[in-house]
Structure formats: structure tokens, C-alpha cells
Image (cartoon, rainbow, N blue to C red):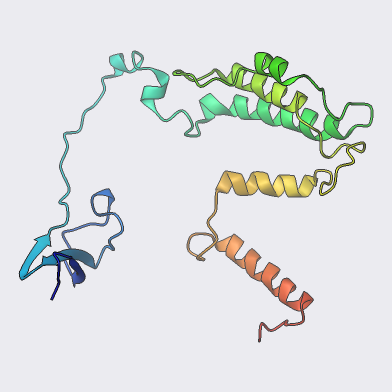
Length: 213
């Protein structure tokens, strides 16, 4: 029996094919929906799951499509070849030329140093209500590279750093593009197998090739 007005919470599993585990019942499986019961004193009350609400579907006429702002048509970051291919090509060109190859050239500086206040004036880092253009983003990328320490430069002598590994960079581009979560074969087949190979090699290094112990 609960005392002092405290709540006892229990979970009852019910089966209902009419309920889904979408956003209206997040965290609930498709075939087993959870009904939450709270008890206080001798009273037991049931909190029913949310039922999906049917919202009217609105369509936009073709002639009105051009009147909509670009960021209202679609998420600005959702990949679109027409909108983003040129930007990504130019961006990767900047990274390859200035952050990788020129950044490790002995004839170039480790850092183009400027005082903090001058750096604030030269790079606009303010938060804006409207998004910047692709040209502005490329300009910010160039400025960021120009005023950053080139940790792969031969004259950069700080500890715990090494030059850019071009194959590691390529792998990181691939994993960022695919955005994998390595926890099941269904979700990430190649990377799950890759992880097994790496773990096997690590076990061999420490003396447990079969994983025993």
C-alpha cells in the first residue's frame, strides 16, 4: 500500500494492432504497446496512450511554389544536388588545397597570427536570423583555415600532434557522409564487420586472439 500520498508506478503490456510506435507513442514497440498505470491510495487510474491525430493535408499550387522562401520549401541542410553539389565541391577544394596540402608546405606559415580583437572584426561569428549564402560560408571557411594553427605543418612542434593522414581523412569523409551507427548488422552491415576485424586484431595484440578471458 502506498503511504504519505506517494505514487506506485507499474507497467502493463497490452497488444493492440491499431496503435503505432510513431511520434505519438515514442519509445513504444509496434507489437507491444505499454499502458501506464498510476496508483495513489486505493484508487487506480489509467493513462491511455495518445491516439494519432489526423491533420488535414495542405498542398501548394505550382504558381505559388516560387513565392515560398527557399528555407520554407525544404530543410536547408537536406542534401539536394541542384542546391548543394557546387557548394560541396568548392568547399572540399578549399579544404584540400588550404587545410591539407598548403597547410603542410614548409614555405607557408604555421599560423597567420592576429590579435583577438582584430580576429573578431575580420570574421563575422554573430548569430543571424537569416542564413548566410554559400559564398559567405566559403568565405568563412577560408578565413577559418587561414587563421587556424596548421598542426600538420613541419614547423609545428607542440606535443600530441601529427600531420593529417590522408587515408584517415578520406575515411572520416565517408563515415560523416554515411552517418552510421555501429550497433547492429541491419543498421550498419559493413561497419559492423569492420569493427569485428579491429576488435580481433586488438585481442591478438593483448594475447587473447580467441577472446577468452
